[in-house]
Amino acid sequence: MSLIQNIRKEMFNASKEGNANHADILKMVIADIQNEEKSLGKEISDVEIIKIIRKQVKKIKDSITEFEKMDREDLISKEKAQLEVLKKYLPALMAKEDIKKVVEKVINETDANSIKDMGKVMGATMKELEGKADGSIVKDVVQSLLS
Image (cartoon, rainbow, N blue to C red; front, side):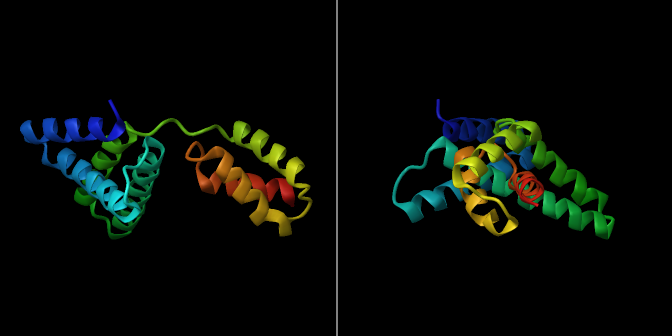
């Protein structure tokens, strides 16, 4: 069963059980997936679906940060519940040590030797890691190794 099928199945189950918060976040993800498929004119892969879910997770984390500034516990708890729903569909991210090994390999392959080469290293590294690592951690690792 594909990832989109699993998401749809869980969304229907959550709706039947009356868990509106759970169903709503899955509906948003399904809508994002459908919009992406329409814009590309084809069905998207599970890897691309994971990217969409990661974007949704980032939005939720940003919302939590903003709600914390406003001291809105009601909204924070709702967002955290949605975050937990989405995390089930995401593979574990690579550890910083594993990311460092990949970055070191890319630096050697690209003959990068200064912070000026950061864009080249980041591009190659993110292409190799494709959804397996947090971009901000990769950026930190690249910066530390090129400095």
